[in-house]
Length: 418
Image (cartoon, rainbow, N blue to C red; front, side, top):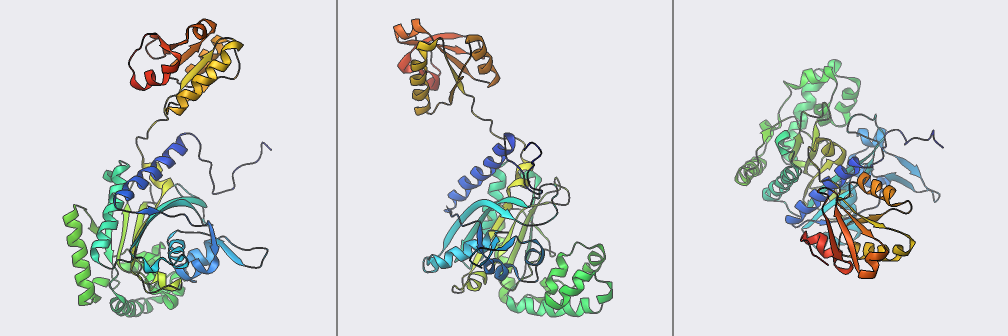
């Protein structure tokens, strides 16, 4: 059994790793709550069509990375590779498209079969937020500002830059796509094999290529800004103006794209240089056609997701675990009294522990190893008088306290004589 290890691309969350993880989730949960977002939880596996529809059959995630399997009933199921599609499915199947807008927060594991690297795992975790049912630029600005506030709450906003782009409306993208096809078709021989295939199926994805030979062609490729319709330009102007009012700083990056037709208008990424090539820590955009892909009505939507592992790596200061109080009975006859004191302190919200065996010396040594703030010593003399000895393990000061007043004493910090 000792040779068993976590499956490649997975990891255990223990000690500080777990505290960092929890801090990210709890901070995000608190801040999105200020914006009126409620938390949803969807299953970790779905009907495969939920993701093949939402991500597109030509995407790398669907074609190469999804954990898809057939269950005993012959149904094709997939471990969720991302959260947005599942939220949209839940909106439709729970009949909530008649109760819009819906503001949704989620946190949980996602699964993709890809090469593990720094901050990226095959089972990874995300926080995410989706605003479903609002079509105005203000909704986009609010969701982006909320993402910025989460990063500020984590104390990492100074290391992160918001990059912003517009994908325009459908008419804008159709004109842009035509121009991209013409541009890349003339240079087909210079494209990587993957991008040559994308040219036929989805030319916008070429703009996201990481291949060096493709990157060299992007500088002169047509820009969406040259194809924006008047309505799309107004939306883009309103979004940037609203972000300015909200005090959200950004830089425009015309190379941020989303390849599927139901993505439009806003696309954004919060990026950092502290994580090397895996620099995006939180990203999102507008996806007005996805709910309809799930069988619901046309529903405007905007959202983002952030990788908890990557965000955790950026944290500089995390809350320490609360230091416990150690309860030390002296002798078997003090055990019952120690249990009573333990449970009273826990009931009052004080973290309290005891050793299960050992003499006084060993128990005190354990109290020091667990970094206890105080040792509560109970012997037969203390039981007879209804008191305990409370020793401050930092200062060495010892105080006699009524047995039924230990929790109040520790919470107030005020010495009370018996």
